[in-house]
Amino acid sequence: MVQFEVPPIVPADPTANVTDLLVERVKATPDLALFAVPDGEVWRDITAATFEKQVIALAKGFVAAGIEPGEKVGFIARTTYDWTLVDFALFYAGAVMVPIYETSSPAQVSWILSDSGAIACIAESADHSARIAEIREEVPLVRSVWEMHAGDLDRLETEGASVPDEEIERRRSIANGADIATLIYTSGSTGRPKGCVLTHSNFVELTRNATKSNREVFETPGASTLLFITTAHVFARFISILDIHAGVKTGHQPDTKQLLPALGSFKPTFLLAVPRVFEKVYNSAEQKAEAGGKGKIFRAAAHTAVEHSTLVQEGKKVPLMTKIKFSLFDKLVYSKLRTAMGGNVEYAVSGSAPLGPRLGHFFHSLGVTILEGYGLTETTAPATVNQARKSKIGTVGPVIPGVGVRLADDGEIEVSGVNVFKEYWRNPEATAAAFDGAWFKTGDIGAFDAEGFLTITGRKKEILVTAGGKNVAPAALEDPIRANPIVGQVVVVGDQKPFIAALVTLDTEMLPTWLANNGLSADMSLADAAQNDAVRAEVQRAIDHANTTVSRAESIRKFTILATEWTEASGHLTPKMSIKRNVILDDFAGDVEALYAVPADTTNVSLK
Image (cartoon, rainbow, N blue to C red; front, side, top):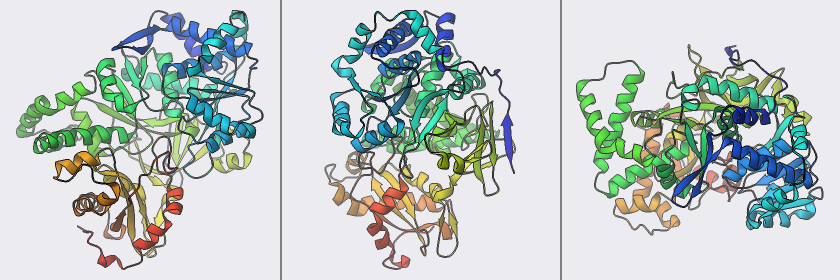
């Protein structure tokens, strides 16, 4: 059994809870700008001391409203400064937040509030409040619902003004490291969401060790980040808490359509994103260059970027001609993309899905080192992450200090250490099934290299076995196909079938630009585009490329383009944009069967 364990580099403190991280930050640097919020065309700083003052005022409001230590409070809102304000106010009041994705359906809201036993819920907008109202009779324990846009947080602060500071200090100090800090429900990609009990020590110890192990990212003077992925997800939640501990200035942009302008004005030093964001940045730049008649230049620049970065990572000598081309393209292409991201971004932390070497090397040549990491809700986000001092593109990095990772005989990744959750809420059967002693069984398949850098090779439950007995990991085919600008999502099928095939959806954001760049009507309907010869040929090219990375038995023989989108709203994607494979296979079972209704040799799919 292959196993890597890294001892913690920060001594554990079993008495510490999450609020101590803010207390320590205020004591060390009260006047440090810990946050910045939009104020017209500029950003207005909020110091650590001011943030804590606001946290205490709101915590008093929760106390005055009757919330007792240990009680659960639901929270549904977008990624804004107020999200973290509410988070810490609940910590200071001794309560336990139960975050709910702001895109959740009424049925999902009902399940999370009822299963968690929440006694109150905070909603950002009237739309969120309406969803709660729709299922209010199903959650009789919920006695209060507050709406942020209706001014309820201000009213809570006013009503809590008479609560003494000593009461807040008492409440924030009640929890120790082993106590529950939050109850986060899994995204439900394989069934009904399960509540993960994450403790204060999970956040405190992981935060302290992760900060030190990547101090070049988080402890550099002037470090800042712009959060845009949902803070209801453990990935952004963890970074929000880490930023407070490390003194990183944090801004928020909930509308990803406004991301580039926000990056330009905020000018962060590092980003937190999922691979789909990097794909969008690359594809948008490529199609913009194509529209301006500079597509050939961009593609040449991208090729040179990947070639240059690959040679550097492998320690090989970069040929003089490659150096010259790299320098030229740096002025023509790379510098413009750096400016578009604010001009100061040096690092990006990527998680939730494989990024792929091509994008990793491309951004590395832009001067942005993407630090891929790996983890789950059950591991408080990261278990492994590449380091600024040494990273390997294509891997998810080495084990974080305080964490152990081992591979079972079948390659399944198992995790132990400071980051592993306590249990599934009110679900002892699922908890027992998820552990082998102290080791959490992730369900993912991976491999270590000699230096302890982990590579994710697939999902245990998603391995397809063809009728011929060939094992196929879908992600190895899906990830390169999804990188194509017009591909929205892709699901590889073929379990117990004679060959591998794929369901493909189109990217409705990128499609109009691609159509216009290829002499077609930008207004073409999704249904027409799915049948269009040029569109099918482009998808074909993406599939041909993916097929070159696998054996013929693993290659995609047929595909169909669906005249629909898979979205979170449609129930086919999780909030972090992962596909709900089981739901898709159920909903599109007829399309899958149609792929096998005629022999594979009738397709025009190339098997190069």
